[in-house]
Image 1 (cartoon, rainbow, N blue to C red):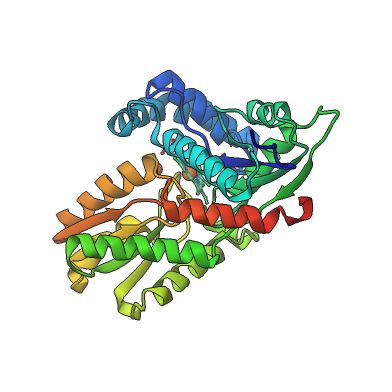
Image 2: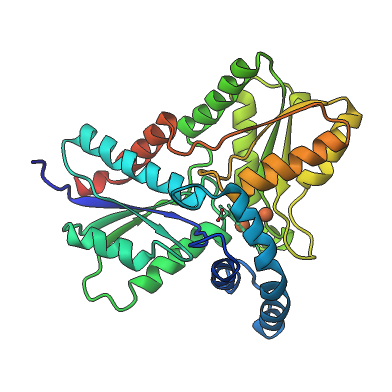
Length: 330
Ligand SMILES: C=CC1=C(C)c2cc3[nH]c(cc4nc(cc5[nH]c(cc1n2)c(C)c5CCC(=O)O)C(CCC(=O)O)=C4C)c(C)c3C=C
Ligand SMILES: [Fe+2]
Ligand SMILES: [Fe+2]
């Protein structure tokens, strides 16, 4: 039997409802949208809007969308994240010759950070590398995951040693993995197409106030375009998933996709590099909603390129991130 390593890994993702039903979606949205990292409005203004308007109207609509993408084992975000965790643990154990515990936690909902931390503790882990599964740092996601972890450890009398991974927007293996997935799609469809890189948006104000997210997304797009040797007119960078009335990062995905056919771009591939794992935003909003917008406005061919999920390239990337960030514990 293998010895357990000196460290463990906590991978963290956003969170998803426990079931594709209105009460579960309402519970999830309440927790998520009550986080001031996500919505930073004055609580005296935001709480009544959230409770009386958003949590009354949105959950039934969003529950229907979850029903469209739900898998036999559960929400895609959770299922693919669990598969990645299992493969990562097996690969690390194979590579290092030690049993390296890997736990999965969600910032909102289940599996909770408390349960994941307990699993690591039960295996004797005293040093934890925290790997938020967001390639581009944003205070709305990465810092929110750190906040949640600190809350879970608040009353812990035996703190582990922690290493917090910031992001990996320009990691060569990440860029190569995205480029490989584009090339695989081109081979499958027998042609190269204009590439749309669509990122989850955030309010523009957050970036003005210092959130580095937009710069990190731009870096990823530029490096992927360079890796694929795309000319300036062969790719487009956009932001999707707008929420609420204020201005979000531009260019907006829906507006751009409606306009592309009239500019002569009628066949596209769309990749969503900010999502390490496929979820409602990619499987429904990109694949179905944006695909329809494009085709209803003169687009002829639209194909979404899946997230890296539990692919061999993503596992190799995560193994490298872990090896590079745990050297101090060897
Ligand atoms: C309200 C503000 C929101 C900000 C800011 C935001 C940032 C942000 N989100 C992700 C990744 C994901 N978001 C997902 C769903 C989702 N996001 C918002 C709102 C904001 N996100 C909402 C309200 C929802 C729920 C669905 C809906 O009601 O429309 C998901 C998918 C979860 C799933 O269960 O599949 C992910 C993943 C990033 C990367 C990001 C900023 C960088
Ligand atoms: Fe989101
Ligand atoms: Fe959305």
